[in-house]
Length: 581
Image: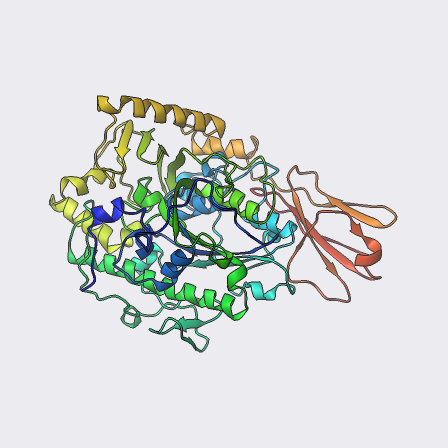
C-alpha cells in the first residue's frame, strides 16, 4: 500500500519539495544565465492544488513533475486571484487583476437570460496587450494548444497559432518560441465524465517505462468510456479526506479519480517534454509547470480559501540552474506575465499590476489578493487578502450563504453526497459550515495552524493588529485598482462600455500612403492592427501585427492584396477590409 500523509500534515508540509533536504533559495541567488531570447514552455494543468510528490503528497506517482522539481525550483506560495479558470486566465494573459478590468464574473457571454445582461467581455486599458502578443512583437513564435477562455475574445494576432495542432515546430528556423500546452484531464468534469487520452499534438503515450515512448495511431478527441479509463492508482487506496468532505465510498471514488487523472496528465506532459528532447531543445528551454487554480472538489474550486487558490509552480531553467531549490516568496498569477517578459529581456509595461518575481533587485511581494463574484448564474461579492500566514476575507453579502447551487458543480458525485447528507442532517460541523445561511462580514484565518480555514479569528482580540493590517491592505488594493465590489454587474458593464448600451465596435483600419510606405491606423484608442499580405494568391495562415509602416517597395508586388482589421480587447473586432495594389 502507498505511504500516505495525513491531509493536515500534507497542508502543513506544502512547502516541501521532492527532496526534503532541498536547498532553500537565497534572497539573492546567483544570477540566472539565460539566452537573450530563451525558449519558454508553459505546461498548464486545470483544477489542481499542490497534491503532488514535490509538495509532500505521496499519494500519486508523477515522475514527469517530480523530475522537473529535481531539476528546477518549486515555488511554495503561489496563488490564483480567483478560484475558477476564466478570471485566472485573464490575469495570466494580461498581468492584471480580473476585478480591475471586468473579468471576474464567470461566463459573461452566457446565462444572459438569468442575469438580464448583454454579452460582454473584460475591457482592459487601451495600452494593454496579451502576453503572447508582446512576445510576438519581440520576435517570438507564440503558440497555444488548445484552451483560451480568457473572459474576452483574444485578438487574432495574439498568437501565431492557437488550436489543437499549434506547435513550436512550425516556427522559422532558430526562432525563439513561447508555447503553452493546456491539459484538461484534471478538470472537475473528469470527476463526473469519463475521460480518454486528451488530444496533444504528438499522439505519444508513455508506457510503464517512463523513458520509453510508443507511437499510437491517431485517435479522435472523444472521451473513452469509464470502463476503458486507464487505472494508474489502486481504487482501494486509503485516501485522507479533508474534514470539510464526508468519508464515504462516493467521495473516495472522486478522490481516486482526481489522483488517477493527475497521473494520466503527468504522462501526457511527458510526451511534450520528450518532443523538446527530440528537437534538441530541452536544455535551452525554460519549462514552467503550474495549475490554473486550486482543486476540483466541492469547497475547493470557485472559493477563495487556499483550497481554491493555491497552486503548484515549478520552473526548470536551462542547464538545471538552481536545481532542487524551493522558494517560498508570495507569488500571484498577475506576476506571471511580467516575469515572462523579464525572462525574454523585455520591460514590464506600467499598466500591469504584477511584478517580476525573478528580479532580485525588486522587493518581494508581501500580499496576494483574490475575489469571488459571479459563477454561471449565481452571484456573490467576496474579497480576500493574504500574507504568508493570515488570510482576511471581507463578505459584502453577509446575509447570503457561501454555498451556491452551481449546476455544473452539482454533477460531481461528492457534491451530490454532501447535499444528501445535508438533507439527512448527517453533516459534521466542519462539513456543514459551507451551507450556513449567512456568513460573517469579516473572516480571519491562520492558514498555517488552520489550513482548511475553518476557525474564524476575526473577533479574537489577540489578532486585532493582524486584522487591522489586512483591512488596511485590502482598502489600499481596492482603491489602487479601482475595484468597486458593491457596484452592480449592470453598472459594471456600462462602465466598461463608457456608458454605451451596446458593446463598442473597434473602428475599421484606415490607411495613409506616402511615396514608399503604407501606414495603418484605427480611430479607436488601444486598437491593435492585424494584417496579411497576399502575393501571387498565397495567403499566410497567421495575421501579422502592424507595428511600423509597411515598405511598399519590398513587401508588395503588382496585384498584391492587403487584408486588415482592428481590434481592441473587450470591443467587437472591426470588419476585415482589403486593398489591392
